[in-house]
Image (tube, rainbow, N blue to C red; front, top):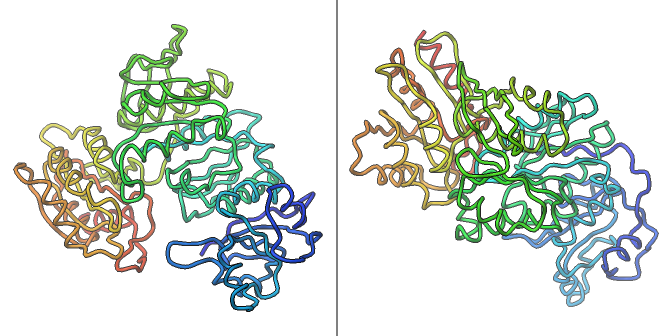
Length: 508
């Protein structure tokens, strides 16, 4: 477990009574309303002295089970739902180990606002930009942060899939979007350290589970939507509704919306806040007239809606990264970044595991990318063009315990768009890896690609490298930046990039 940093001080800490009054909560018994609260967490292992421990009902276990552990680590009070109260009343057992208790009918719904209050409403002193979409969040965040960092008056923080950045310090992150308790603590730390603008990825899970509650984004960005996470949302309509909830007055002040997908066009038609639209291929306020690609970067000729053209350099290859660059540029201009900086500020960007080139002088190209949806796999494979006579060699697996319906689609599109497809394991988690691979291969029926099955991911990558000839492009897809592989519930150290480097060394 990686501990979330906390602010060194809280200028005006709240008392238990103030929290109860402000948010309409009730004290379970005659507890001291003047008890001072200096932090909040829903992870009993992360409790610090002075914390309010949020004991929430979970899928398998109620958080109240861990109250004793929280008390031992210094928790001074508990926030929970009425369920544990009934147990205490029925049994007469001090289920709360002497701690004062705040009761909320839906404590998760209250968690974001309470967390913001405990940490002094840190977002009020920051400009916060939230990015959502199936693909493109991480890259758009990196491009936007790069452009903002080139301005003299902005110190940038980033929260997302590849970690947390506070100024120049990088920290690991367990989730794309942290829990509300951790998010507001991070924002407070950023503000304390001089950060004044925060760029963060906002997942659909975060929106449904209230992880960004207590926060109103200054700008919300929609990249695009394609099939993913249907194990959680159930249908594309519910998935879209989760994303669309970010673009409401309760969650954001202004929007930047991509129109190249039907979902983006639908969102723009129903958006409840002022919106700037952008597109590569549709009519929009900000459009791309031309894309000029050379040496792994590209220049976009952007029409800003007034007829004025900008030559904008994006330091990443691929048309989908042109779309990400267009989104980031639109947001930079909305945030009043001068054109001279917005046009050049995204030229030198490195995003781990996103079209990441691994080059030790071999006579073929190797790319590592996080593509893990059918749409992302197709976009990455079609974005690269091998040299004359060269082939696309893809290494791809699907994650376990996730959307099963996308597996044959991913296998099919990968087989259609590559010359050699090596089907391997991703993060099988608790599922049978062979069954996952079989579902992928079932989607390739009737296609003429050279399809091979090698379950061990390291061996699959080595086989792809050994297969490659001058002019080929090898694409290792699915895990991107991830530093581990989860098999049978155990996370083993594993890096696609390191596996590629090892294989390249073996063939040198």
